[in-house]
Length: 376
Image (cartoon, rainbow, N blue to C red; front, side, top):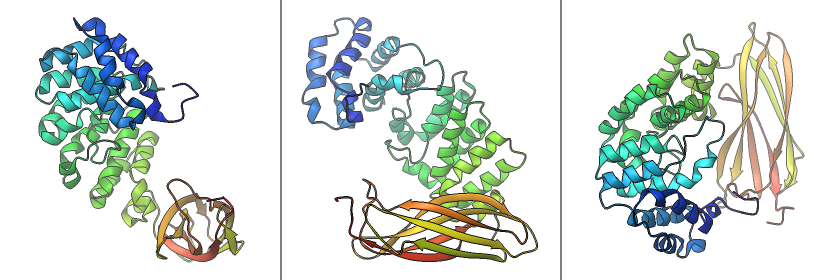
């Protein structure tokens, strides 16, 4: 993608349409480049990213053989060489419309489409392409994916966990698996010690998806996986528990060795007491372990952001992991920005801040936010 392009959607422009035609046309007799380009690029600049992808995919399908099997064979033959490793998968973005074509037009031939997805995922990803198949027949898809957890390509192995995530970002929601994720657990089990971090990260993300509706299930899996775990698996478990940890789930915290704090003195100070939108506050947390034993502590803080209607919503931020010996103390400091972002509108008012130790509120303070300096 050129540096001049301001938005990701602009990758899918007329140049991408031409490049895709150059890729596919040699493998399809009578491929009409002009007709494909006209259909694919019609009003492209006015479309958002996924609408561009769908339009290009639809135009491409019209130039392929009528038979789904023949169309999938032509697409597979046209694909570039497999990505050599997992260091950079962004080079495969041109193949996104290919995956969209499989999702939109391939469900009438499961076997041909599945073969095409196995090939595609080694060049880009088939995590979005497989969603309609998964939603229509999860048992069949999972049965076909299970043997692929031993595939020599890490891209294929990652697809086995990423494609079945119940809440895959940008993908169709798999509501059946949100309600009952048990069918995908054997896939995650098979991949939890994969040699590639790229694959293990996907397993962790799938666990985190499941945790949002089934926290006790994920805690039980984490407890089992933590026993005798390698450092790599420990990282996977930590990442898979991240939503539960932020929520202060006692079971998730216990897996990582963080029990309820005992005889912990804490004092939180926020300065200055008033700031304008666009400025920052300084947090200072004094901790003292008054118990007779050392304590591992996972320290976070949450800001209760004032909403437009005057109510508040809490947002948890990570701070520090530490161990306090018996009788020892430590002061932690943190600068927190009160600048508006595209995902976080800010409103004037009293903002409460709570310090959390192992998921429990141990101290709190507040500051006033005034209308701002950031010009918004």
